[in-house]
Structure formats: structure tokens, C-alpha cells
Image (cartoon, rainbow, N blue to C red; front, top):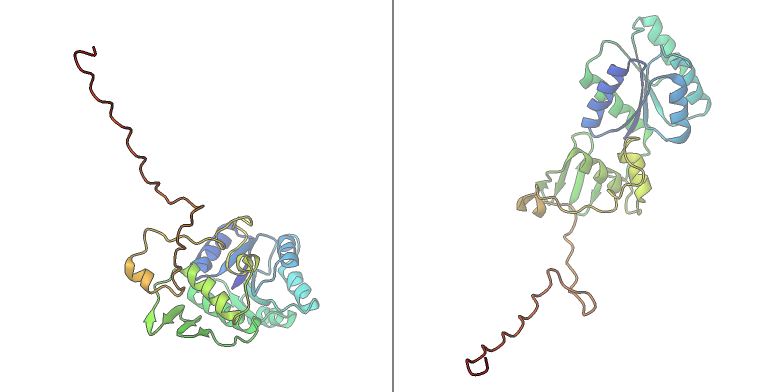
Length: 242
């Protein structure tokens, strides 16, 4: 899930973004309304966490812009304006949800996930053969065994299963699973070498079939190379020859 956190309090924005990333979300941060509009112009977000009281372009205007564009991005207003009148006004602007500050982080995560489910197209079922994923519980199972996947691996698996057999380009994986902090030229999504920290049981539980190494051809030398034959030892010279 791709989330944009728009909050002018830099410390709060960084804390919210870090917590959402730990929940497996790809998160970008905008510290004012103009930056939020710039992000929204180039990236498709599932959810925008939006403060109303932003410098420059107010959060209300950002919400109006999304509504005017008929954007599929869902808006969660996270703001200090907490009266009933404030909440009614925010929802009337087109926000999909409203959470006043101070807030409980677990509730924020639950509300973002609920909005993300509305923003996403109906999934065909996150299953493929004996492999299944429960996005809400963040649990992947293969052949009845729970897979010990990291948060990022679960997010990649969710994106691949949601594609329902369609090839997923590396660029799409970067956009949906990683955030703006990722190197756009990285080869992470193209190459995934095994890490020494994985034990044998983890490898046996991997959702991906193990690749069989190709036998070396005559034109492809093996590594390490075979040791070179030793040089012949010269015969000792006799005393007469000396």
C-alpha cells in the first residue's frame, strides 16, 4: 500500500511514516500543501493522511483538488480540529475518514488499512496453488505451513499475488512496495541473492521454487579453477657433472 503523509510537524510526520513503514506500507512525506499536490501529480497513492492546518496550500484545498479530479486516492484527515463541527466540515469537503489528534497509532493503522481496501480494485483472492496470503493479518501460508517472511517480503508477495498471474514490472514493484527513499536505479527487485541469515528451514519454506544451477559448459570455466599441474622437478645434478 502506498501512503502519503502530509503533516507540517516534521517530528510527527517522521514518526508516523516510520511506524507505517514497520506495518509494511510504502510511505512518502510532504510537509506542506504544495508539496502534497506535487507528490499527488506524479504518484498514485492509495491513502493520503492529511493535516488540515498546512502552511501555503491548506489541507482543505488539497482535499478539494482530489475530489475535483475524481481521484481514487482515499483521504484520512488527521488534525487537531476535533469538534463535531470540524469533523462534519472535513467530511463534507470530501474526506473519507477523520481522526482527531491526539490519536492512538493502532487506530490510525486500522483506518488506513480500511481505506486502502476501498481504494484498491477488488482482489481476485490472494492465493496461488498451495500459497495464500492474508493481507489483514500479514500472514503467508504455503502447504499449511506459515512462511517466515519479512515485512517487505510480505508486501512484495501481496503485490505479485494481486496481479493474478500478470507479469509485474520492476518499476511497478518499486512504486507499490517501496517509497521515495528507494534508489530508482536499484537492482533490488531484479536480483535477490540468498542471505547468510536464512537457515535451512527458512529456505525450505520459501514461497519461490529453488532454481537448479545450470551445468558448466565447455566455454564457461568453473570456479574455483582447478589447480594447475605442478612444474616438473629437475633431477639433481651429479658430482661428476658439477
